[in-house]
Length: 172
Image 1 (cartoon, rainbow, N blue to C red):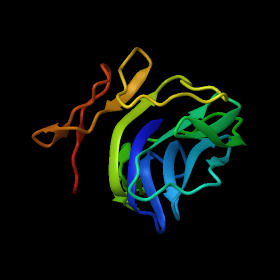
Image 2: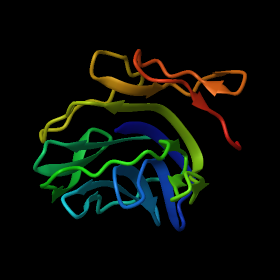
Image 3: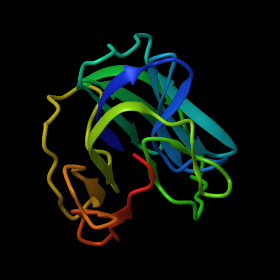
Image 4: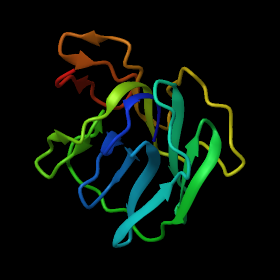
């Protein structure tokens, strides 16, 4: 999972892209510090950065899982990792962009700032060496969700991944 983010307020715990609730995965910031959570085995593995994001600046965040380890990349550089062995626990809750999801599928812990270019992939796109983040993501056969977030059609946000439904806008 990856996204470009520009935080305007970094206090508290804020969801960026999440499908959590004792399962699945999410990108978060807590007091400005980014993290990637993935439920593997019987607990969350959390890859956390040591450095907070800069308020008002764009940052690329990417969380990856290779079956053994979760890794967080900030602006293309390795920022944290954690052991993540065991089967992933899934759920039927919606994927929420700009917040965390609660057990009823409602957004909570809203992100304050801008989010762009959200992509969820079915494969690990980045390795431990780091990478140069692309400002515009493209869809391929491994893309599950791709939200450019640069427009909507009525209440729908266009998902440029071929095999997934469009999103709906809730709030601002």
